[in-house]
Image 1 (cartoon, rainbow, N blue to C red):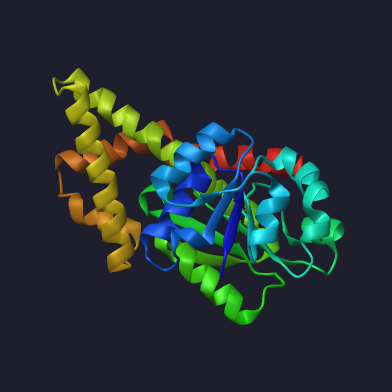
Image 2: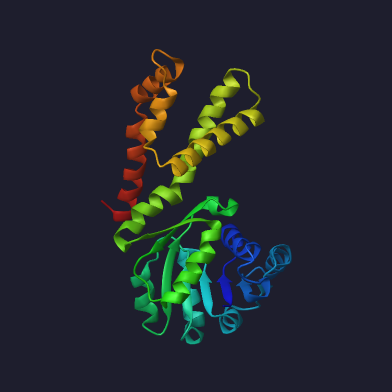
Length: 263
């Protein structure tokens, strides 16, 4: 299988590197196009993929085209390469685009799969949401899902849940970063140097998340295990409840979904 990226920003670089470094696909079978050719060639030398001079040249060289450009650029890109796409597969990692959007433009001549990645994929700890409706061949889809599995966990969602899934996993890293920053500020306030504060908080968040994933325990059970009767942690939990932590989490997602749905 030969794979080509149209667009080579940070996320596309992370995906390409994850594919190549996993040894599941050789760098000579991974192509990429981006308008800034000097930067593209520099990234190609660093990551190990093959730079392509034009979108058409890229599509002609591959079996699977990964659309990784900005969402507003996609229609223009598709217009340019549409005649070359017949019989190919498209995997889109562009926010907001779903199977039906592509199908209306490309018809039945192109096999389509939409995926929503998130930024932790850059360190192999991402969430990769595959839209359930697709037109890939079964073996082809399994191979592509396996490749994306090198970037984190792969989950499948129906189209109607891709929006909320993207809100949680796509926007969520920013919220986690705010929490890390807030607790680091508290650590600095009480004397811990800033760099060490970030390290302590980030590792605490990482460890807590891995403990939940690996144990499968309800987060409330894990929280209770840290809260001794009359102890310090339960006082902190009380303060977070009074500050409306849970309500703030819900409100952040409601704000996103209102923007997505226009309601």
